[in-house]
Image (cartoon, rainbow, N blue to C red; front, top):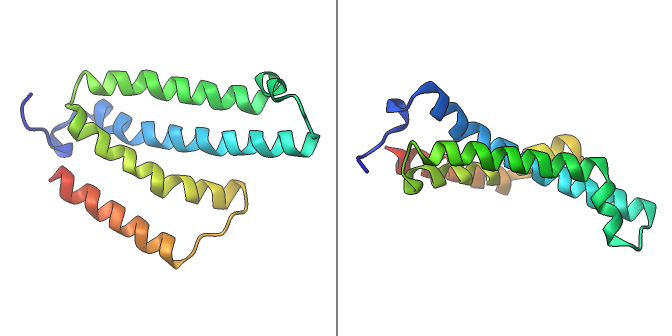
Length: 124
């Protein structure tokens, strides 16, 4: 496949390259929320997770992201697209801070800046 740059992509593919890691990150937060709900209920039967609406939403989000990812991969090389998955390392802690009240510190901010810089270097 030919060389690809982010600026040369169609708006739809560019949006999906960003949306997919956001959806994956959202799914991760929902999985964590599911685990906390199980713990709070004291469910000994792990199978009860299959009927938890938060877990079902997490699976739906992951499934939707996977379908979008397949669309992206038919348009750009995997080596180009996969670097965008590094965004999940930036987005998950942000969502965890907002929805799970987890703390993020200076190391997270520095690491996120390095990830973003790396993404820019790889894509140019």
